Each structure stands twice: as structure tokens, then as C-alpha cells.
Image (cartoon, rainbow, N blue to C red):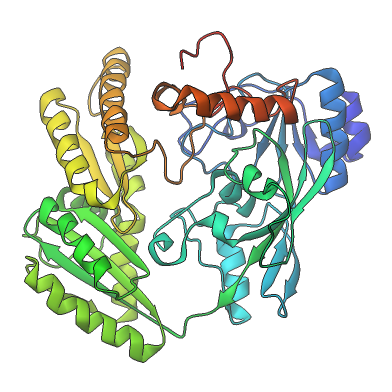
Length: 461
């Protein structure tokens, strides 16, 4: 692809032979694609020129950040070109007057958070993978543990610069707080998983850094009682930053993986809370929730006063997916159901687990109904595993929709959830999504055969 080298002008940033396999997959490494070229872009101009030339030649293009996604969104399904944005990782501006940061899409979440906090600001979206890129977070509308108080990535994107499939550069949104001027194109691109555009610049909303934070761990005799208490906690107007639920079985896996031990190993589940804000307000809320928790069946209420100890407790929570993966291959699921139906959904999952013999480890964001499951392979051979996984996934996604839930809260659809998403989503919704795809990318060169996109061959939506 000599034309690529002419655009880039730097041989080291265009790889056409022996492309490292990590660029052909996602963080799990189980889905593999192929590509003719891997290009490390440095500017919007380069992205525009490459997409314009690829569009003219009908060459598929797969945008990629850090590759930390869990659903195959960065797997190049049809070959072509991988656009890697990891070199576009600068903070372009910190605007104190509008409380915004303008950054390139390849900056890592952990680096952005560290930078703005050093300047007295706070970027609340906090997905579990801190080495993900901001562009990737926006493309999947990443959520995380702080969503119950602060919302998700979409709520902190003020504006975007994007490049469409034909190379057209667009600016959508900006630094304004309000915008009722026509369709919200910015929100159309957020969560589109690289199927509609390549993101090249991000204007992000910041807030003042909270002055104080404190966590508490609440052990319950079983998972059902722990989850059932969450609604009472949310109704108490204590404004928690995070409300997580963890079954004892998965907590044990996290303990073994991280080397940190949870108190009350006789518990059946834990609710892990964090509060932030002004010190007096936080301390008052921590005390208020203590009485409520003990009145709703908690075995104990454990304030995590020591910041180091609190960090260790949260370390276990953050390592749960990797802890399960260390024991067996697993399929990660992040279904969302209404908060009031979380316990019902978990009970159903346990019933499916008992009937099928397939282990499913449950934890997640109790404060917003985002249930994370790890469907565990165990010792099953490849054929049996594929069959059992399909059986289990079909049942749990069907149940989620019966409870007015959705396929994904923060991981996106990608490749691995696509079958279930297409099966359960209304035809009218899919038709509109695909009409938008056809309008913005008529040749389907951008991350095709992902998420909502119908191929017209194997999709039976």
C-alpha cells in the first residue's frame, strides 16, 4: 500500500507485514481478524486523507484505541486497514473558564484523570479499565462504578471532532453547556463503536475535584438480601458515588488474585459504597446509611476509614474480571435491568446456572442495575463450550429483555453480543440505526459487521 506511506511519510508508522496479533483482536484475545496494514496516525489530517483514499478504493477501516474492549469491537472483520490512535494522546487545552479539557482520542483515561486532578478538577467517568483511551470510552459510552452519582461518559462529552468514512471532517457540539440547535449529532457518534466515524478530538466537561471521599463495606448473609437493600440505600438521599454488589464466591476469587482479604468471610455477599463531596456531608451520609443497612439485614457495617485499606478493598473489586479469567476462560456479560428488578434477574441467573451446570459469577453496579456476569468455561472442550455458552447467553439475554433491560450497559455490542442484540432489539430500531449507517457510510467501510449493522446475509433480526 504505497499510497498509505505517501500520506504518512514515515515508514515506522505503517506496518504491512507481520502485524502483531494483539492489533487483530481485543483484550481477551480470543476473536481474531486480519488486516493488510496497521497505521499509527498522528493528526486529523492524516486520518482524513486515509479515510478518503480508503473510501475511494472501498477498503475496510477499523479504528482502534488501546484495544481494551471485551466484545471484539476492534477486531478487523474484513481485513483492510487498522487505524491506531495511540500516538494522538495529548491534552490540547485546559480551559478553566468553561471547565473543559480538549484532548486527543488516544490519551489514556488514567493519564487524563491524573492530569486534571493535579489541576484541581475532576473527570468523573470511571470504567474499570483505566488504561483504556478516551476515544474508546466515548465510542462505547463507557460507564463504571461512579455512574450512580455522576452518570456515564456521554454526560461529560461537550464536543467532538470526527472524520466520516469519506474523509469529511466535522465538528459537533462545543464548549457550550446548552445546545438545542438541530439534531444532536454529537450524541449520535457517542457509543457508535467506530461504525459511523473516527474520533480525532474530544472536548470534555470537568467538575471541581471533591474535597473528601470515604467508603464502607456492608456484608449480608446472602446475595439476594444485599441487592434488595440497594433501593433503600438509594432512596435515603445519601447520594453515594458508587454502589457495588459482590457475591462471596467472586470476592474469594478476587482475594486469591489480589492477595487482599475481605472482612466477614462468613457473608454471602457484600455491598461496597463510596461517598464523596464536602467532608461534613460525606461523614453524615456514611452514618445515615449505617443505620439503614443494619435495619435491612446487614450483618455488620464497616466504615473504611483508612484510605490504604479502602484502596485494597476496591482493588479486589477492580480485579474481579481478571481474577475469574485467571482461573478459566470466561465470557464477560454486562446486562442492564431496572434497579428494582436486579435481584429478580440474579435469581434467574442462579436458576439457569443450576439447570445447565454452567458457572456464572455475578457482581456489578447495583446502583444502576448494571449486572456483570462471568460465564465460566471450566474444563469443557471447545465444541461443548460453544454449545453451552450459546444456550446460556440466549436465555439470560431473553430474560433481561423480558424485564425491560438491555444488552449492554458499558462494554458495547461489538461482535460477541451482536447475535443477541439483533435478536432482541425491535426491528424498527434496527432499521433506523442501519439507515443512519447507510447515510454516513454508504460503502460500509468503517468497522462493518459490528453492533447494530445488518449484513443482509446471516442476520435474522
